Image 1 (cartoon, helix red, strand yellow):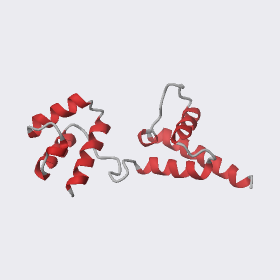
Image 2: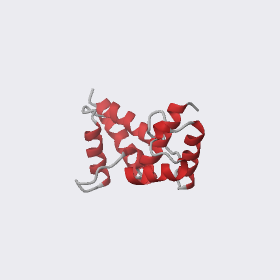
Image 3: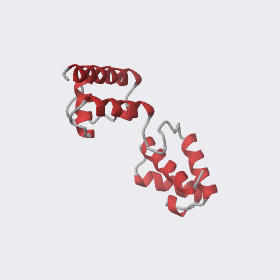
Length: 134
């Protein structure tokens, strides 16, 4: 693994574990004695990644895109089914399908299996209706 991809992996893990900057830097200092991933060598980066795994990180997202396969599927279906291609409009549609409050900001990559299935089926229906309208 290249150093750049290891740093990217560290930042993805930080985000997925929901660590604020202060907690993240404290963990870096505890594990490596440094407080920035940019200052770490390959061995130290490996130690940090192992610590994230110990803390419960599973590495569920594709690290090249930062997105899960389910999130990519939802976005691809959205691109095919919708006139409005923005992430904001996708999240609005997910809110409607799942009956979520307006102040909730759903993340397509973090949906439960049941919720993702509902969204995928709704998008397939939108795609069928769009194809029938032509």
